[in-house]
Length: 354
Image (cartoon, rainbow, N blue to C red; front, side):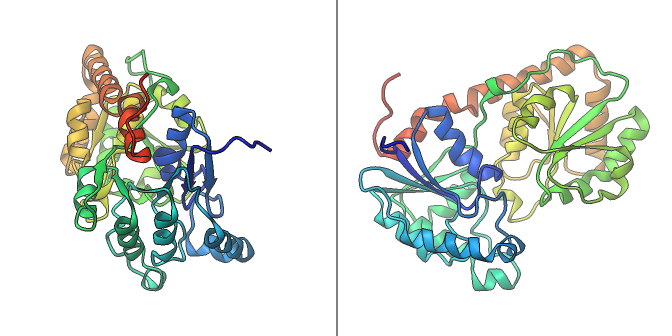
């Protein structure tokens, strides 16, 4: 057992299978070579009611451990999203205020009140507000989220979700093979967003032969898309290794209060692999698409036209789109680009000179 003191306490509701846990905390710890004392509740990728009911004793132990937790007096505490799904913010407030420096990080529109009995009892939006109010520093994943937090805190900064471009296999051959392929990466909870572009995908399949690759831990039917879809099970490293074999990356979103808080992470992953990208210009997606040279689409016709355009354009044009995406993500959304700012915000001190 190591006796080397930690640089940072990290409290988050998920294990490494949860995207926010990886992107907003664990990837930073790895990139900067930090020693972190990590609390990840059940260590699962989700903490829904079903997860808790299936593991009542582990849930009880996780709750007890949070309340016993004593943050290090000589190091910052980074709290990502929330500490517990069974909280109205009291445990988050206590952890942040007890720490040497309490830093609260969030990358979704947690301020939006969700429906359902569990949310009436344990309000995620109330827990979010109390965490924002208690933190010495709030880090938001985009400007939209930062504006919401600024109502409750004067110490709010933006650090976008970042990728490690060197971890991705990068596309080098932009010829379209016998089967054009669009790729979508996501979770079971976001797979329903694909239904919004199903007519466009089916139409593009009929006109160009385009097929869809879905990289997800889900397995639910996708309706009309099932006949043109290949599923790839998500696992660590799968996304980084496989994206480059597709021809275009997709990020459809409906326009609602929840999706306006999304941080465009799918677009960044596709761009890191050198793929042309198409997305819905909702929330920060709009500016990210501009930075990456991506195509914005808002309805069935625009999605169909964008899909057909990427598949049928000259190879040099497709390669140029991929190259612009790759350059844009490295310049604006890489860990290297934001490392000094992240360290300053988390520690309260300037980052060490390189």
